[in-house]
Image 1 (cartoon, helix red, strand yellow):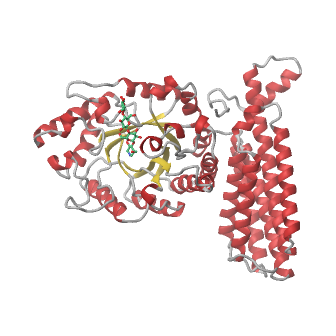
Image 2: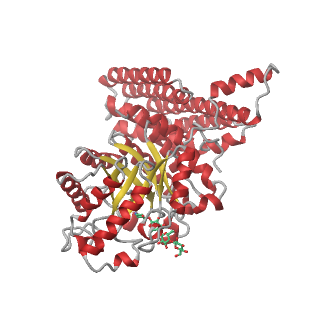
Length: 549
Ligand code: G3I
């Protein structure tokens, strides 16, 4: 179980530390949970500081290698830096078992850091390096890496300051670190470093490295980092698990700022018969969200491919179906008016693979067949009438990458806006790597988000998960990068306000039901273990905080 207390109960670390001082003086009896929380915060701060030191040391080791070309000395230096970090983290978490759970292992964080530094050094060459390029170039590159090391240490050590609420100090120090890197890089690189990396690229690489190291080391939850970045990070959930798994509710409240009703607001579960509604499970989720300060994304009013009850599927005329849709939307969206932030009004309106077929790329559901393409605008208008507060979305998968399906989704969104339909946003579902489809890079995703944002729309990643399995030895490392790149790629656009993962943790993923029971698609694993994808997500949230305009 993730050990960090939920943000509501975690005291501010400064107050926690002060409480410990008073405790030592025997003046104040501090409750054990406050003391534990304070030491958890203190542990996170100590680990982050040591991680920043390690980042600088590793870059210096690689810098010395630039001058010497001595692989053995480089490897010995890396072993020494790893041992120092492991020792420092063991000392930091002594007596605070929760802290060991709250951060990546030093082995993982060091492996990721060293790999990123190696890639950075290789990129400096523009190609894998052979023999040293000559003493002047080696000295120059060693200087660049010393500069990068100082910047990395400064940015990482800032993270705790920022999480302790010293935003101003943190921002100022981070700006100084960036400025020093930029100035020094320009001077050094102008001589004979012969590197293939410019100032901006160097800055981005060091920020990414620092965020990954800080993300691995800080004990902050996704929710705390999302709050600090002013974005939402959510999970799709099922209410039945709250009762059957005592850790389900606390994990949802501790790690996320938003919940999506995975199934319970689809038509069939909530309105199984024309005159019968089953609001219980959806009410439970809306109540949970209100109790824990979570945003609610309601999913989904119309979805023609799944969860359509027979009385709808078998509607005999446009008149009959139009009346059913009007009643359904008024009753369901009306019930939750003012209590949900977003509605997925129409889910997956396009054909599965985006082929045009003979319906101009729209999925030939009962809604399209009987009501025509205008059913989408009609549903948006009905939803807006029922709940003028909710932001209304259309949601689709397979549109994260450039291609015919994204083109069709863009045309649909543009046409709806031109028709004056109350469309406020689009959801890119983000089921990545399924059916052998390629996964988008962060840049490709940002481009897609910006494209729809230019229409004036909000964009969210609404169902993020990855088709991944443990028999692939590279799966976890790739998943760390995927979640980092997707979250950052979205959040770099001000139009992207949230990313939601499709399930609270691997055991609750639909992928284990519909594909393979050993799937590992999400950031939280069995027993809510924080997987590399969790730390990649945290690194992205740390970067988003300073990178978002
Ligand atoms: O609630 C009933 C239960 O009473 C019954 O005993 C049981 C056995 O049949 O079925 C339960 O309903 C299941 C439901 O999930 C709730 O667990 C349905 O059979 C099952 O088909 C349904 O699967 C859901 C699927 O959509 C189809 O509705 C998945 O959990 C859900 O993760 C998945 O989510 C979709 C999004 O809505 C849209 N984007 C794609 C995404 C993945 O397919």
